[in-house]
Amino acid sequence: MNRVVVGAQWGDEGKAKITDLLAQDADLIIRYQGGCNAGHTVVAHNKTFKFHLIPSGILYKDKTCFIGAGTVVLPEYFEEEIKGLIEEGIDVSGLKINPLASITMPWHTEVDGYSESTAGKGKIGTTKKGIGPTYTDKMARIGLKIGDLYNEESLSEKLDIILPLKNKQLKEVYGLKTYTKDDVMSLCKKYAEIFKPYVCFDWQKVLEDAKRNNKTVLFEGAQGVMLDIDYGTYPFVTSSNPIGGGAATGSGYGPKMIDEVIGVAKAYVTRVGEGPFVSELKDDTGIKIREIGHEYGVTTGRPRRCGWFDAVTMKYAVLVGGLTSVALTKIDVFDTFDEIKVCTAYKDTRDGKVYTNYPTDVFMHKYLEPIYESYKGWGEDITGIREYDKLPENCKKYLSRLEEILEVPISIVSVGPDREQTIFRK
Ligand code: IMP
Image 1 (tube, protein in one colour):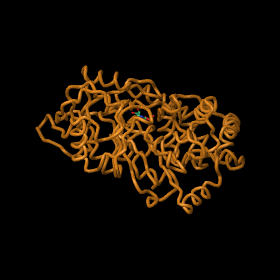
Image 2 (cartoon, protein in one colour; image 1 turned 120 degrees about the vertical axis):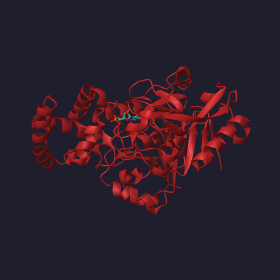
Image 3 (cartoon, rainbow, N blue to C red; image 1 turned 30 degrees about the vertical axis):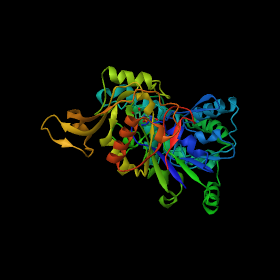
């Protein structure tokens, strides 16, 4: 069974834990998009591990963990992440990088920082890890790929084309410092050393062998459907395709390799950065969710915006994300809540029009208010429960209603951060 794990909201849904659990059954784990903008926390061996780019499957021995062609890699960050894992005694010999993955160069992070600090109202609230500018250059066909680092002749030719253009942009558009070819060549030499133990030029063979031998593949997504560059709350999105379909473009396998797409969603919603969020709670309930759920960014430390579960965006995520089931996380955060709400529709405050399907014109979202269904809390600690039938009745009622609205099963319920705190349903 080849599975994709997709974030079904605005990222930070607890994908890392679900990926980590499913990685037990996988032979090959492929991260297919994004870069070190992601922050994935896994609790294992009584320790907390924080991942940004490296698939968390690396915590298991004998798995091949691939960083796919659809990703963007910031070399210094990658080096630091590897170092941290090695220091914790983790064997990283199973890690491979597709040479077609794009490199985030220093000018990408500089432009990201500049754009964010000068955008005023147009600020996206990015992680400032150079994600947007790296993907921009990739699409403009003036990016560098990891494979380029190992061919001095072609690297030199590419830089002759890229650098004059880049320097003109850096100087005239952004007023930022420029780069000499010597600077960049020596930087690239350093990068070549960083990636050398992991870059996999025979990646086709690894993928072919896995396919031929019916190995199990797990496709690991980052961010979430609502941050997808095509289907998310554009322009308040990331610059890649976290949706299930992104697994095919970013990994090197076709869509027929995928059997299941598991959308990970929290029992409530969080968002970091700017952008619309109809069910956001700007009151004490929002603060309560943030504090109990420890909703602070792994990559940036920013407090996350919190709100009730939004079934309107989630139904949309089921459709465009290609979800075949849902893993619902952090439901235990509601253990002390008397009332739990679910947003099932939006109402346009201008004309009273009600939307049950997600309106993709995000600029009108400021006029929308949530319509809620209300559920009674269960008032007990569920973090020790391991069987679905043993969950409190009110909790099961809430879960059944979500399944009814979303029209896909909730196959996994997570009741705490540890691997063991998980309920698998048949
Ligand atoms: P970028 O991906 O750094 O360009 O940021 C674009 C938007 O995506 C911002 O709103 C970020 O806060 C958001 N974002 C990027 N990565 C993550 C993530 O892993 N979790 C949650 N939000 C993210």
